[in-house]
Image 1 (cartoon, rainbow, N blue to C red):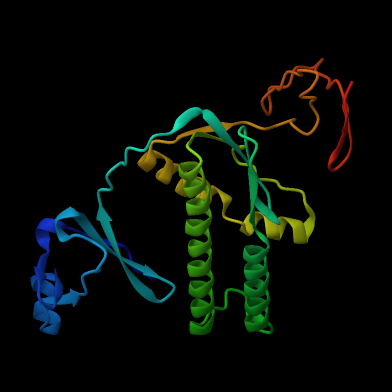
Image 2 (image 1 turned 90 degrees about the vertical axis):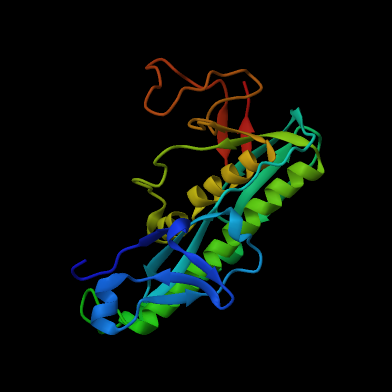
Amino acid sequence: RKQGLFTVSYPVRWLKLTPEGIRIPLGNQVKAWFGIDSFLLPMPSNLNWDSIKEVRILPRNKCFYAEFIYQVQTENIELDKNQVLGIDHGIDNWLTCVSNIGTSFIVDGKHLKSLNQWYNKQVADHKNGKPQGFWSNALSALTEKRNRQVRDAINKAARLVINYCIENSIGRIVLGWNKEQKDGATLGKKGNQNFIQIPTARLKSRIQELCSRYGIELIETEESYTSKASFLDHDFLPEFGEKPDNWKPSGKRVKRGLYRTA
């Protein structure tokens, strides 16, 4: 592709497992041009060759990655659907989790926020005095390191939530979520930067994947007007963009963390 590289997918029938690794064919044209007909990838020790369906080669930040596509079997675990974990996401407290069995915990987001702030500072230092659109190998390495750290944080946070549900036999998760909530965010320059760079949507997707694997039901609920409406007075909660003209909350939010009911 002009000015770039694209992902290449290899179905497993095109591949061969050898004692040296997985043989990736390159085709007759590459062999004619460069005298190379294939290359070898090491076989991951934690995967079973018979379960692999496809291998993808991805170019990203001047690196190449191998993605192994395989089927994950669902696990049958005894869980109680009447036991529910509610999740509210934020920035400093990435996930605030409260169950209806009297337990709670918080997944801290300050470490991830700090990683993003350090990355932004490093990028700004590298680009200082350079023309617009400047990029370098050092910036690629910085970006790749940051992306790996974010991916690691997502996987660990999702695993914390799922393990907690399994250990406490919780069969249902309710997650507050507003679609396109990052579009038009008005939290100020610094607040917007922190909010937009926190990959909560990717975390939600990872939790969803693990829920389907362990038989946990995940319910997404729209949470517009939850800070205005009164739960104790049974206020009706309209969805964003569908609020009736005569809708008014019964109580009042005095300040963050303090609500006065009717």
